[in-house]
Structures are given as structure tokens and as C-alpha cells.
Length: 230
Image 1 (cartoon, rainbow, N blue to C red):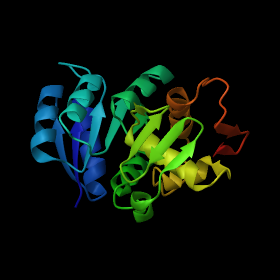
Image 2 (image 1 turned 135 degrees about the vertical axis):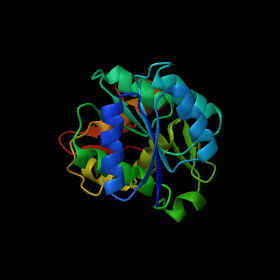
Image 3 (image 1 turned 90 degrees about the vertical axis):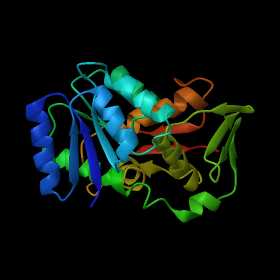
């Protein structure tokens, strides 16, 4: 049974999340503020953390940054009432793996939870032994999970790195958004409406392209998906 820690101060929402997740077979613990959430996350090592960004004692970004700095690398799903793309991107920069915008459906939440919990178990063994890949000024080492740009280290989130590998594996062929949602995020139903892929691609371009607005390597295939030009 997977263990999920929910860091949420709204008692009604926390109760609803616990009920939904326990009904789906998960062991759920609730923390009502950031301090309690950080303490339980570092002591209990849950399989997944669901983290609200709006907490009474601190914001979820700070909790997330502290967890990553502390060496906690398990999947984190952030809950946000903020609709601005910049807020979501900042969450990914802090170390989030996925997000759900309030209000959200039970089906969508559970699909994302299942996808995140399968991430490590379904990581292809070949990725760990793959040779280094290069395109432009970028060098990718799948075994060490490192990326360098013109000799300088580039910090990618776990999902950004897996997305980059998924594009590299296709050797220039196009990957549809549905394929990437299934392969990288392990969605059972790839027709879930989400801009997760697009946001992660935008972040990859920002970190790896000389001109993110005019990318030379991570290309959009209109109405289909993305491909990586070597």
C-alpha cells in the first residue's frame, strides 16, 4: 500500500482528499501546515506528497525547496488555486513533479497520483546504462542523470530530465503529447486535459536553447507534439 502525505490546511479539502485516496487503496496522512508537513515528510518518507501552495505558516514553495535541499526526492504533486503559468513554472523550478489547479476532478487527481507513483518503478533500465547523448552545445549523461551546456552544469527537474530522454530516444521523430503523458508521466488515460507537457517543454527550452523563443533543437510539431532536432 502506497503512503501519501497530504499537506493541506483546509480541513474540508483535507478530509475530501483523505476519503478519496483511501477509497482508492492508499494509506493517507494529513499535515495541517508547512512545519508539520516538513517534519512528517522527512521522518516518514512517504511515497508521494500532495502539497497545497497556500499554507498558514509558510507557502508551499518554501516547503518544497526545503524538502529538496534536505535530500527528499520523492514525487510531489502541488495543489494551486493560482491559474498563472508563472506560478506553475515556479513550482516546477522548486522541485514539483506535477500540479493540479483547484477546483479539480477526482478522476484527474487520481490519474496524476497513479502516474507519479509509477514513475520510478517504470523507469526503463536501458536509460540507466545508455551512452551519453549530444546535440548542439548540450551533453546528456543518462546514467549520471546530468546535463551540461557548453561545459556548464544545467539543473533539470526529474520530469524535465525524463522528458528530454523521451525526445532523445526518438532520434528526431515526433512525440505526441499523449505519448509523452503516457511515457513520462505514466498517465493511464492520455486524454487528460493538461498543459504539463507544454510547460515542461518551455522550461527545457529556457534552460537549453540559446533563444527559447526561436528554438533550434526542441521543436514544436503543430497540432501534434514535439521533436528534438539533433
